[in-house]
Length: 221
Image (cartoon, rainbow, N blue to C red; front, side, top):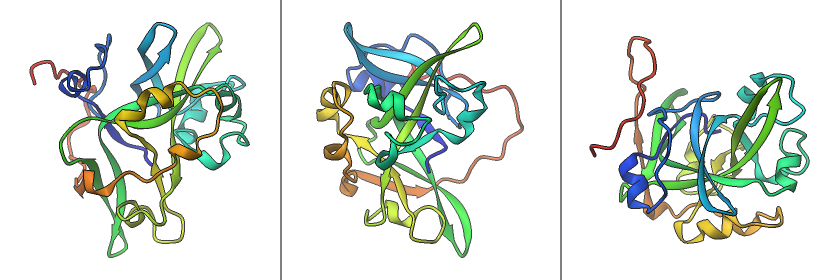
């Protein structure tokens, strides 16, 4: 399960020729944090600030988001939290610089980062929803995952055992195809990312004093 990542930088956004992101966002994201989501509307590509952890329309509050930040592609149409959004093809992408997974070394988890070898940003498949809680309009999202037991890189992550999962990475050349889906059939996108284009390494979590989160200012890069 992917519960921690770094959104793409402003420099990566420009390199990918994406529209300017019209709001500030955090340098590192965990469940229930805000993040930039990219989707396609009648006007073209658009950004929305959304909550990491999908909040379905029937939810009574936002706490469900701590359990819905990942969604298995195999059960999107069966799980109550995701079924309505999936049936309506509310698919977007979460553009990222790096995502983190746990690798168990001598029985102890270590945080490892996965990123592109060429340092470009890349797209993680996402499902999104919009609902109203009281008087508040809430936009939220979940990363869509796939079985990774046979993936050369991702099979080494997560707790020891037969269950291995990976985010689904949408190739840059297929972004429009993904964002234009009219039927919730994802089978032709459920492909392990090409390991030769990515790298991973141990990235210990920095031990810093807890302060107010610093916003992501990358315009100078």
